[in-house]
Every structure is written in C-alpha cells, then in structure tokens.
Length: 216
Image (tube, rainbow, N blue to C red; front, side):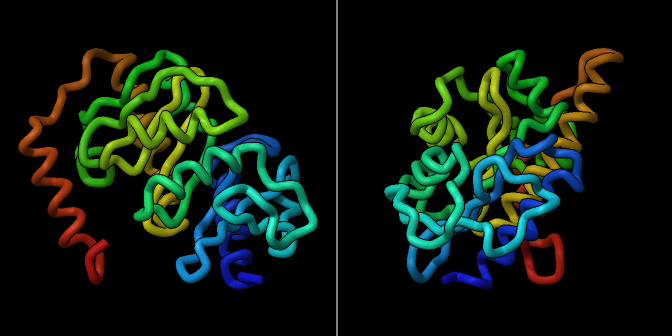
C-alpha cells in the first residue's frame, strides 16, 4: 500500500541526520496521500540508518494502523491533528535541531532579520507556548500559532515544519536551522537589524512567484 509514498518518506527521514537536524532516533517525517487521505510516517524508535520503505507505517487520520508491522512514531497524534485541521498540508517534519531549538528553549520567535527568513518564511518564525507531549496538545498548538509560516518552534521542545508536500516541509526544516544558526551568531555580536515589514512581504512574494524554474 502506498509504496511510492513509503519510499519517499523513508528517503526524507534519512535526510534528517544527513542535514544535522536530529540525533539518534529522534525526529520524524510524514506525508499525506492526496487520493486516500492516509498518512505515511516513520516508525517509533528505529535508527534512521536502518530504515527501509517497508518499515514505514500507514495510518488513517484517526490513528488506526492501516498497513505496516511497526509501531508508528510517538508523534503520530500530533501529525494527524495538523492534517485534520490543515487541508493544505501534505507533509510534516519534526526535529529538535540545535540552533532552532535554542530559541524554543527561550520561548522566543526567530525575528525576520535575514532576507532568507523573509523569502522562505514570510516573517518571524513563531514560538508556541509550552504544552505537554504525547497526545494532541502539540498539534493543537501548531495549528493555533503557526499562521501562514511553514515553521514553528514549540517552547521547551523543538521544531515542526509543514508544507504542501513532504519535500517542501523538509526544505523548511533545513532552512530553518540554517537561519537560526546565523541569527544566533549575530546575537552574540549585537542586536540584529529587523527587515521592514514591507520589505519582508516584497521579498516573500518575489520568492514565491519568481524563484526557481516554474515558481515554488
């Protein structure tokens, strides 16, 4: 079932440690199949290096395992809450990447002080309040606080990124950690200069409508 999506989600999960976004078995990528509405997600506690497409778990939007022999990620209920409440989302990534999560530990958003932040995120990366993990609370916090941004920090926890497909959610996670590192380094030297809101909007619109070979 959903063999092509399983293969993609397996591949994208392996990209997390390659890009320095996770350690050991933490973090996960999921994707939603447009035709069936079913979700493919990483299994719980398996090493990224050893993951195979057949290890991926297929669940419905209520969390019932439809296909697969592994236990799904402990973050599955969070992913499913987001999918149920954001029909535009086709992929989700969760990490505890160091620089982005350092802002989450402070309960602070990442300000729009780089053109790369304006381009990819359209403004500051928000930080949601602390909430308990394990059930749907984090998913609810994501939906309530993420707005139009493809990324959000969870206070004292980590990072969630979303996108119309799993690849775009992974891109947002990689770029988030990159800009978080740069902003962190800038803050060590002084107070980063905010980009005016009208320039943030102009840069984001230009990036969305003109960057790449066919718009992205």
